[in-house]
Length: 75
Image (cartoon, rainbow, N blue to C red; front, side, top):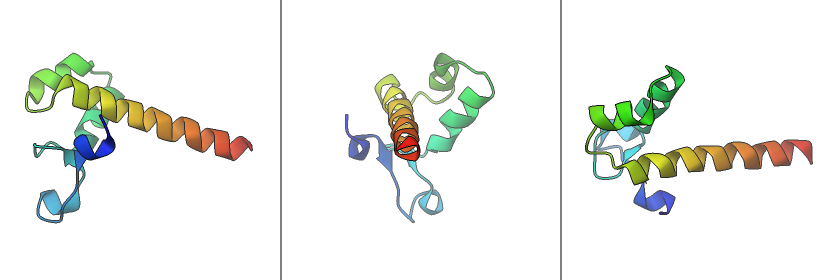
């Protein structure tokens, strides 16, 4: 899955807040759940319009961004 298939941003939807494609669920909500110690399954039960594949892809994108940024900082 590419980022274009996972995240949508438009000023017409929640003022441009990044949301999971095909939903009005902000990506930040997943991050908040995980930061609070909730399980991915808890998030998916609360927001059934988000697929597990979408949630995993967003987590992988965040991980990749952090690891890439870290690699550049040490170079």
